[in-house]
Image 1 (tube, rainbow over the protein chains, first blue to last red):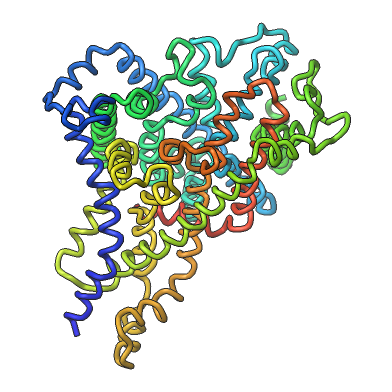
Image 2 (image 1 turned 180 degrees about the vertical axis):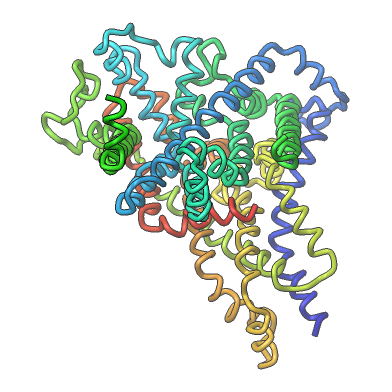
Length: 293
Length: 287
């Protein structure tokens, strides 16, 4: 009896584990091996050209100003874009939570809508709004008497433009999570706080925020993981420019690996990205393990 | 004055609360307008005559609504073909992922075997590995199979997903063992127990997973961009990205193709919103 179940378990698990092993875990590990070789366009033509180069790709990478630029851009996007997205989501969730019950579902749907829009299509729309002469943003700026900004053409503004777009695109996702967490806070906590004479701000600081902690740490984690993978936004809106101001790590990997066929180098970029994510995840987990410190 | 306000504070309080509610709802409406504005403008601009979307001062309504840009998309740009590609790939990925993930999620939740917890913990650890890390080797692997530029190549990474297995696992755990045992006593095989007892009970989470996979595949960009080079096989987002690079000036045409790309995803979301949000929350709250 027990044995048939074990056999069944193996049969049921085999297809999924085989697929994940062959098309996910295997390639990830193979990427590490690939990053230790000089796999390039000549290797594709003739595999006997493949040479083992050890850590040479990583050394090249550390000397490559483009890599440092991409790393800096990506980290900027993660930190600035991530925190703005989370703050916007938190604000929106608090507002929707306090709204009349009849309109709650409506606003939740509206704010969530950008999340399900196709990123390429939404980026095409925003690119039109960012147009330096006829884009609606600059029309609005001129209307209130400010000078126009070349949003996607000025290296100082391009990353900010992409951050604004991604906040619009993503905040609804986190808002839904915050909202569910807020709605699960027992009302009696607020009643008790009110009896103790806590003001609105004190209630927020001493009841709402602590109760949001688990949701917050989850949101921070998925935001960091998601933001490190920045690709489609700069690919469509700026092609990584101007002056590489929006070049991201994944875009750098894509160009090296799939456009110039520096496969070994591209794999090294991918593994650096992976290592950064592991470090970020472990750091966040440690921070989460010590609440209140 | 101060004393006057203090004395009337109890009477004033409902008024203050009322005002606060008014301001709150005002902010919500303005926020909603800001969020929707790009999408509304996209729809309006897509039916404007050529050049009108880039006029100064900007127009918020077409002088003469036209569907000519949509006609161009389907006639000379052949986006209908890409639309069907996207539809087929998203549907196929949904069916495949439902099969693979429901089997695995159920087995991990309900069938005892040695090392089950370790397998599950390993799968959970994979959640933080971004798909891009394996893309170069996966591409070379598919190339050696001759699967590059095929639909199969696009589908391969979505066969089974850790997130899908996780979703089904969490849900299947709530199925009472007594139900499964009753079926076994009646002589049902393990496959039969899964198919006739467990799967019907898992229906809500399967709907969630299906909607997730469909939307994820429909909106996916990087992997189809890498695998598909033949324009007749490309998905809508990939086709749209290359159009957007060529037709920077044709704003109305671009907006029409953006509408075409987004519309199915948005409609599906509006229909299946409850299941979709439930999926996000079961990921977030049980994490």
